[in-house]
Image 1 (cartoon, rainbow, N blue to C red):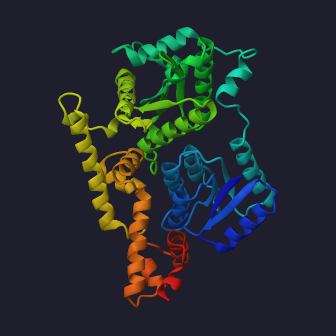
Image 2: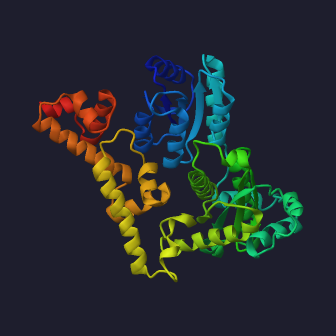
Image 3: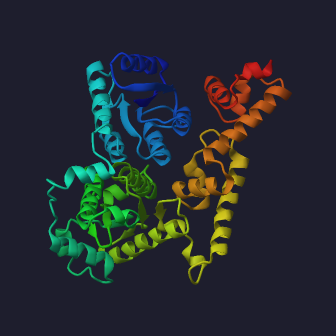
Length: 436
């Protein structure tokens, strides 16, 4: 069963779409409604949302920005955008962020329901996992092998310095750029080798390649291929227009792709994997550098066994003349967390505070900051923000004459009703009951 979040600054539209979905016979567990992007983000952080349906124009935070922030929180959340304007630029940006549909108001009931059904059906697409996948495929599965010569040439570009050669021959491989990043998926087959045959390892690698292709096509220009040692390599590329598009942080895009790859490989293949993500550089002559960065990022799984997606730029290599000691690395991580915590302590009441903003202040990816914050404090980062907001609002309820809407405003909530929902979820009682 699925949880759906509907976001529109017109309450009647939220109510109408919610009623329509409830009566449609779909496999829906809960429907949440929010009237602006900031309220929606609280639901995304606190509930297991599967599908986000959002208007595109909502005042302080647009639907595009909400979708962007939602993908940082949970990259696997699916999204449908609704808009009063048939604007190509908006539609293109929404689809680039992974929106499954772009619907124009006024919505036709059947069109809307068909769109939701299609997304839920894709999410529920039957695919045997783990050992079921292997046992189902061993006898009759025939892999469509990519041309070995092409695979070898692609791996040579990542593995050998100055292997670029003729730019026209590189374009024949599908690498047109001029901006590139490399992701590597390291399948941890060694952890299951006792139960795996060589043929099974090839099947798993083939399945992982197909997961990557399905996830990235058609929204991302990319080339994916087998690499040695149970790896899949993905070269993501942007042309000048796509790279220069405003409103989209490319590192966050790569982080979304990496976390989605890890989520899907782990879910469908029941196989541990580690994802390494390079920086973005311009020019095919840097493909080797990018390949080395992705490999180096994967190595940090040795230091962080409970973390699986690593971005090369999160590690301050330039601060050390050689690989840092465990103590040096712990000190640097602790400084990142303390700096983030201090920033939140000062700004927790700011409306629209986001994980992205806190991460930018620390010059690390949101994914890595979330991991470190939880590891060093025991709190999920947003749980810590809510903790500060709720403690302050309770103090104000008990020791001041401020009204509910004033307290909501003071601790960072635009809507008193939304503030009351969060307060009751946190304390188990409403603000008015605490006041009494």
